[in-house]
Amino acid sequence: MEGINRSYLIAVLGGKGGVGKSLISTNLARSFLRDTKRPVLLIDADPDTCGDQGIMLGLKSKRTIADVSKFTGKITPAILKEFIATHSTGISYIPFVDKISEYSSITPGDIKRILEG
Image (cartoon, rainbow, N blue to C red; front, side, top):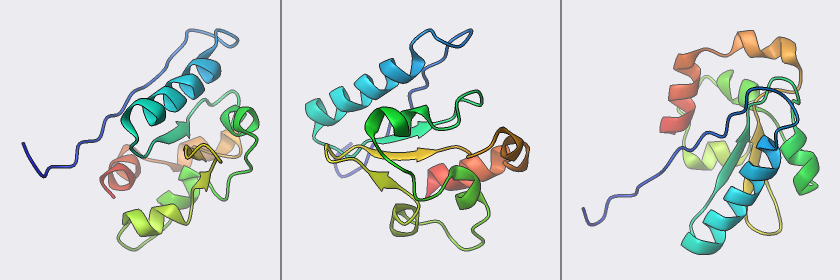
């Protein structure tokens, strides 16, 4: 369908720590950006690491998905951009949380609202 903006959500999962999820997802993000020339947003949702993607990219996140979930207005791409850090390669990055204890404050409805923004 012409004129429709498509987005893809790809999850990289592993059964335990140390299997390479962060490395694979970072390289996937770089590959998608290089091959598609379209924006890529890398969300680090690993509860055990809370931000390893930022370390791998050399980025300190502005805020987290937990912070975005507290935003009461309509979440637009322009609003979301205020919460996201961008790497020199063009990959955008946001961690899910800063602390494991913040996970319980985010609901599936919050995630849906953010991703639809």
